[in-house]
Length: 320
Image (cartoon, rainbow, N blue to C red; front, top):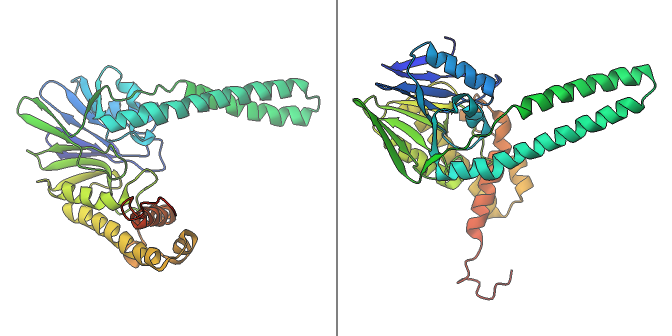
């Protein structure tokens, strides 16, 4: 099946294009009596394709779905696996419940309001050309409303803070929260027997990472914890299946980003100056997602700037 990579006996990664309806990679592990799915892609349709990939390998039930974190490109296929136990960090559940679900509710409400307005506008129009153009816009928004209305936001029901192990037969599956990074809730699915780690967006393989919800100064330390695992194969959230050297290259990128931005902060350059004058280093110029680099600089600048802020002990008056 296209995009399905067999990593070991019963262990598969589904590597997808970021331009597809799946957006982010997923994978699954076949146990003795059940299946664990890791991430479910961006849409229910992509989630259904993932289930088809599982069914091409085994008829065993999907008993567990593990969400690497709370971002939509890793969770919006969850509804296809509604009968499974959805597992994630406590922070990932928080992000789905407090951020994703309200955003979806707002999108549905806005789409409904727009459809109502377009219907009312169309009923008052008399020019045929205006009716035709307005009618097409109405049909587009109705299709969009139908699509998002059928989406069900399912948050992790089984949560943990640091570690959780699943054992079935002779295989051990460890779920690990190793620290803040892409989000505060990223977790790893680690198979010690096979030396394989599904790491989600802790690792972008040969791609500039999305840092919008990240803690970039801590991210490198968390990647070092990933590298401390006795693993040789690493499945990223985006990009091809990687090796230890690929993960090391990503760790170098994070360190280099800090080295690039720190002098600008220390000189007192403005954020706008830093974004305008710091280029993508040549070593990373061929990586994917180049459009994320200015936001990477911004996030690193903000975090380094926060470190310069005086502590209450240094500034007892509280004056700025």
